[in-house]
Length: 180
Image 1 (cartoon, rainbow, N blue to C red):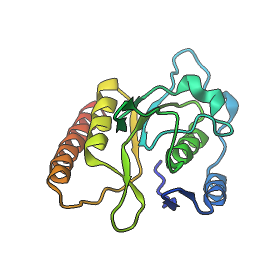
Image 2: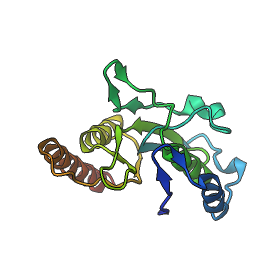
Image 3: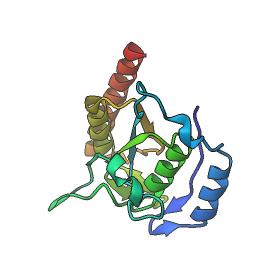
Image 4: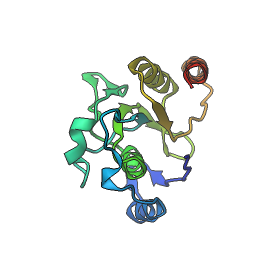
C-alpha cells in the first residue's frame, strides 16, 4: 500500500499541520492490537529517511526503544540527534507509518536539510540523502520510505551530490528487485 500526501511545511514550523495530520490519519483504518502475534512473526523494519523524528512529541516517546538510526545532518561538532525534527515532517511520517503498521520498527535516518533558494522550503541535501539510502541498504531494512523532493541548484557540489544520489537509488532499486 502506498500513500502520497503533500504535507505543507515552511521553514520555522507548520501551517495547519495538526489538522492536516489528523485528516490524513483519519483515512487510514486502525489495525487490531492482536494483529502481531505468533512465534514466526517479526517487526518490519522501515527506514524513514527524512528530517528526524521528535521523540518528545505526544505518543512518540513510548516508542523510543523501537527507533534506532543515524544522522547525516552533520554539524561542526558532529551529527545532530536523530530524535529531533526541524519541520516535524519526519514525525508526521513516522506516526502515519505506525498508524498503518503499528508493529513496525522505524529506523530514522536524519538528512541534512537547508532552505530552498527560491521557495524557502526545507530540502534535503543530495549527498546526505545518498548516504542515508546507502546506510539503510547496509542495515538491511525491509522498506525505505522517502517523501521529499530535491531541487538542483546548479552548483558543482550539487552536481556531484545528485550523481551520487542517482547511483545509490539505482543500487537500491536493483537490490530490491533481486531480493523480492
